[in-house]
Image (cartoon, rainbow, N blue to C red; front, side, top):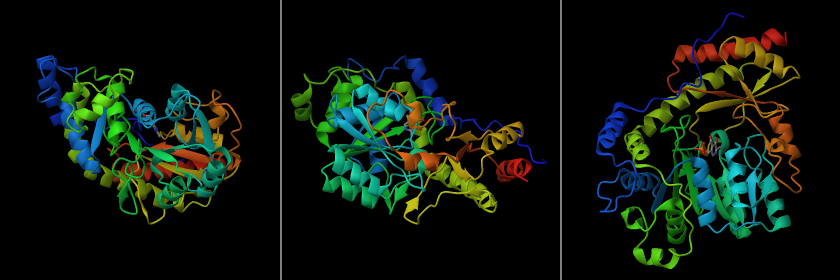
Length: 395
Ligand SMILES: Cc1ncc(COP(=O)(O)O)c(C=O)c1O
């Protein structure tokens, strides 16, 4: 093998200088908590919420401490009670079923198809069988399901959809941004997402009751009037004694680091897409590799690349590739490794969770992180390491 990549693919994009300056300014004031007892004038978290809501065209936004917290609070605020059934596409990351476990909800897995997205037929039959009134639609690895069909099925069965947009910040389906299809949506600003604040989450919704409940449960004490992208005080009056404080709010410091990154989203997504498509075009030429189909309706925002590797020597290919600087994650493995797991590894999920179609799809699915700093030349080397690793193992 000739190709070798000398770069840590898990290198996150550093926040820009404006984030560093804003963080230092705030650190000097000591006001790192988002609420002040003398009024929240100039609060970074409230400003972030207003700006993020405007970006999504949403009425309300609630900043929280992680994407997982955003999912938990969005579902709880939307009315999920312990024991309620919540449908979830079977390809996602562990914090997503984790949020359902945290709610005491019953996870009902729904099969995905070869496009790595929820299979509308499987969703329809699950909805008809089990009477679940919630769908947690996780746009895992930035693959967007047929949102027209999914929305239609949700309307038909009176199902509330909550979107997990951790991997689709700025992505659209038929021109509509992800995060705008359901009753609420959750985003993440964990380091490997489009925005990097280490940890962080955002909820958007147009529903005043969901917004108020999420604000109260995020841990606003009785200082909720310091929120700007929020409903009017009378809605808070209705809910304020009934919502527990789960202390999941975002700190002002996190918001200060995040705000200067918002205007960078379009440029970041454009470059990420170039890197992804460049590598995809190179991988596609190899007969042992197949890339998931991307329909025209899907304007995707990738921060990683997925491909299917044929044959039964996948582990040997992974070993070769890692030796040459490209660690490939594999979703078909026996054990959960690093960030990578699939439903048989989530042993806490009970009940009948037959998702054999998903198991077949995931049994050959590989995944590689794409740092935004990757140059064109490094992108080509990355693709070459993968194809040469396949050739070395499967001559
Ligand atoms: C698909 C998906 N949803 C949700 C999350 C949760 O985000 P966080 O790590 O901010 O809790 C992640 C985390 O990487 C994710 O990959």
